[in-house]
Image (cartoon, rainbow, N blue to C red; front, side, top):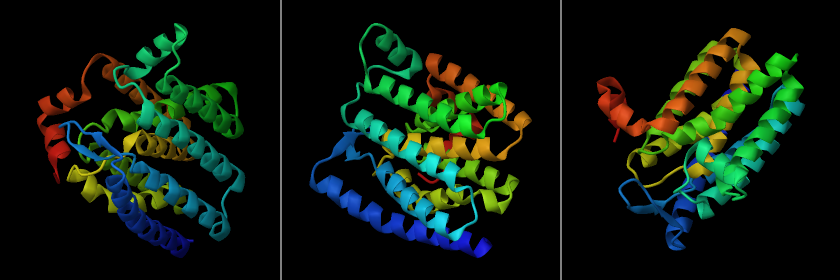
Length: 270
């Protein structure tokens, strides 16, 4: 089993290495560029490489590993739905409308935004997979909310070079160290992509986009609800709720800048 996991990691690493080069040149050639926080035009939506890589490696894992094929199939299908809507949000989304509150309030007024569509899609996917793995109503509710908030969590951090990717890697390593190796192939595959992608993100020459941030958040969330006990889930749920409430009222970037340790980690590698 360990050998198969290493093969999946290497496979993910190699696919990501070549696809990042291909998509970077493709986006630059066709002027498919977006402004970063410094208003510099760079290729965004590079998270599409993660979606492609994760799809290929997931299908490969289904043939190599003794895993729950149904759950992984649900994970993969939902990830693709989230990716499509997130990519739509990247391309035509209204960035003046921010946060859950902004998109939901617009939806109530009859103004359907891509952000609202993304939230609805995230909820449906989260409820769908939670329904099949939950043992009771309380667990169903907790799993669903964790997934909904996890999808958006990485997106909240993707405002400065390397920030979202570093946090994702840290959280994935924590999950990998705390879980039996048989349950973690989707994280190992994701790490193959992240290790290749991180140096370019740190240089500020590419961005994940919503398509990358949301699908990475989905991957973290699914692994979390599949592998930890109810106490850890409850702690994760409270932390995610607090982070989202804070993000609605304050700037995450300013909070990080004012904290010496967080600011050091944030700038590490740039």
